[in-house]
Image (cartoon, rainbow, N blue to C red; front, side, top):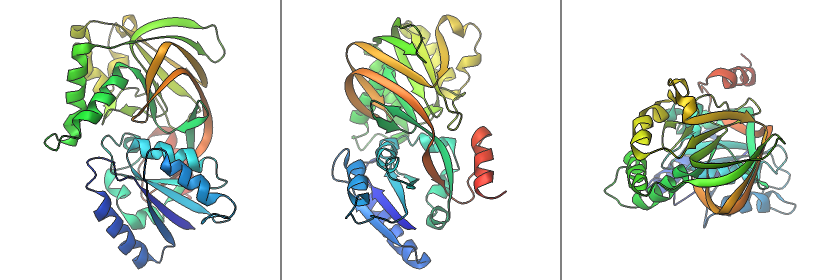
Length: 323
């Protein structure tokens, strides 16, 4: 097995890459692990690197590889987008980004930084979300949430702002403008319906924004995505709901069906009224149409040895570990 560590120097505040690189070199040498370390040069480079080096004549051609996404959720998405197209390729994660929301679904954070646990990890097939021909690992956000991500990216560059507070500051600043989104949506081939909303989120995993349990019913291995649509409510009403949106209790709040609704599906097609900013695992792109389809088990996730999971993933993890 070749262990390929793909480091994103732009992840987080950018100060964890150098010490992580030194740690990986030392630990892989101690463990006798066949490894390669690569630092990305620009957005999209992780995907291109995997496809280029896995092709015939490439550095990893004919080898079984585990590609570790060393960065945030956007880096995971890029690595998955490449690895999902390579036969037998696995994806591990070392979370050094700002939000690291995908990892919140899977295991205590400490294990992700235990190189020995990573090298001896077990593969668990979980769902990948295909969007416009590419792959997402965790969540897609449209409208208010997406604008918060854009604002958070600007705020986190300020050295005096703690990473955990960047999203909160971004949320407050975006609330002043209160942007929304309008689109036509078709779910599982059904009749298209038009919506004008404050926000919409399409979830494989439940977390976004550095720990907001936005869609607590979302499971990484159930073959579905979960969609929340929040109406264009007032600022005061939104503020009153933020606590519940963060702690995962919003679906159970009395009368919530008047303010938002939840849908689960395998396929969804969004046609936006105008060119729209869409946030995929923390990275923002502009698009006019968004087509989503779940591919069950396409993400060959390598969980660190000793990982703790919940619900459906727990069964898959125990099976992979031979328990």
